[in-house]
Length: 292
Image (tube, rainbow, N blue to C red):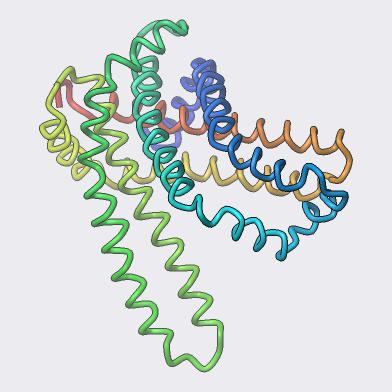
């Protein structure tokens, strides 16, 4: 089966499981409220009694930002700690939800209940948590060290350029290389997660090894499918940015409209996440031997 047909099949499969995207959006919305609320309270406390609040917010006045940062300088360790805690909690929450998404996609029935979703979240969380710990060195090595080598090479090639164009091209290539490297690592561990759910193996390291051999056998097909799903996400993002650019702002009804459009985009991002897993699951069924 061609990569495009697998992508279409995965798209249809993900559409049938569209409730998963709604559940992911609901959880992400609650998480956003939990993270944004403290900052919102700080801004409100700073501006609540200011007659120029609207002007300051509209222009993002640099003096006000400096004053705000100075005022809360003593609380910097607390703020940094809260941000780090939020990042750790987000990673754990992502591992928890990924178990529910892949588990529901792997179920034979077309409809899955909310109880099924959270059952799969809890069932696979411990293995996905261990996989999260295993994946950190890979991200640091491939997306960190390897990207640093590429960046250093590009900088050396463009250092003596007489115009700014080689520098701009090198900067864009460096950004593209980072995105591709991160995508490569993400794709690999997506298949490890799928293998942990579908193969029944408990060992994370053993499943990682089996997945590595599988990816090496079918790398270009797997990478092509991943890029195809990635293009769908890029198209969605470009559509969101274009509409957001032309939406008028300034009045409460229009602000509400922009907020709803933003939430619709986030829902689309979650649907794209389901699409990635659905297409990769179809690819795994097509090219991965049972138990491998």
